[in-house]
Length: 356
Image 1 (cartoon, one colour):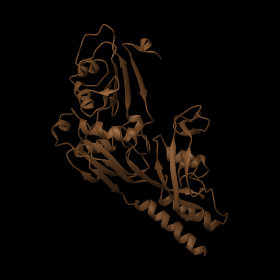
Image 2 (tube, one colour):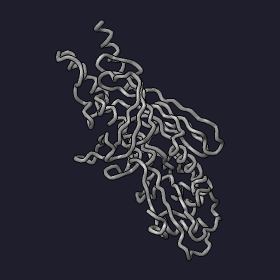
Image 3 (cartoon, rainbow, N blue to C red):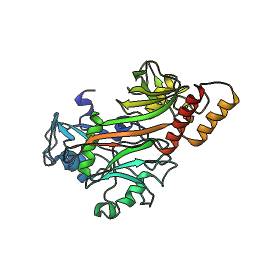
Image 4 (tube, rainbow, N blue to C red):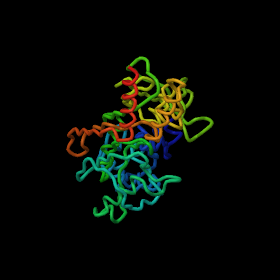
């Protein structure tokens, strides 16, 4: 597309998919403008806030202060005055939301908190952000209550700054910004993949090789839009890369560590399933069936007991590392494997030792 074709218009591009593991890139909206030849010199914060729907001038200014507004490939401050034919790019940490966030007194586990951010260890079963079918009881509702005494949150002018998400039935660590500046700075780290995140998963079978990389475009399933599929020829979906290594081999299942290079909806789950190793008890991708082992009744009952103990996919966001958005200091956090998942891992260990 030439500049003339979209001069005075917006080119909008979304990255990734919302609501699932990895998925930080969907939280960015990338706007690109070419200023009209007859445009008068106008402050860029005023220029952009008038063009991006439901985005305040304050948000635009915060993006500029964080270095997320480029003019002709150079970062500019909010008082920069646009000139005819300037090429403007703005990266916002997340799109405007129409859903009202109602504070709710819901228990959450706060691992770390300061004036700029909070790190939460999310329990399995909790949705991160309100959406169709889940308008309340989410982590965002809980954080609005947690931040209720902060002036901007109290007035509704500010909401928790989400920069990545994990599935409802995945447990583990999330970082959330408490102001626009931190939100922008954290968002840029996730976009540039300078954060460090490791997941632990229990999968069916034994991946071969024991350590490797799975590469395959991930997109919506052509028959069921609620789940994802891999498009190995790259004809659909978006580029996705998952690095894995076996941590412990447990007979018919394996404990695997996964590192996301990209963040797509259900990426770990669909990549492992595509390679023939669905996550244990992952109903959406076939892991809720007994895929490996014997036909003996005792074994079949053992697996069903494990399913009862862990009524979700066996996936946990165990570690999280990033640079503090204000101080620049590297912060690292680790979450223990939750009781339901660790109990099933122990049962498999005992089962294997009993066979020897």
